[in-house]
Length: 118
Image (cartoon, rainbow, N blue to C red; front, top):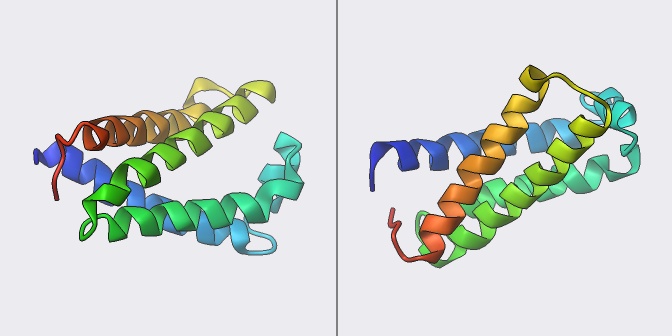
């Protein structure tokens, strides 16, 4: 596997485990979710991010899991991007969600085609 894809895999796992944990903390991300108007989804979002990050980690040993973990995280970031567009965030503020959506979408695409192995 090329270095770029492997870096996407590792960085994404770390980022989602970290941000997922922050979402589950009672105060860390609460104001952001309130600003987006989706405060009721903070715990669900954090749980999905942690599950997706763990799915990326486990997929090193079980590659068949990768398209599902990466695809789910790409979908989650699609909705994050929509939320940021709705509150009129700047492109710079949207860029992490956009990069994570594209990176995980690409991982899912490559893994689903059997083109990616750990």
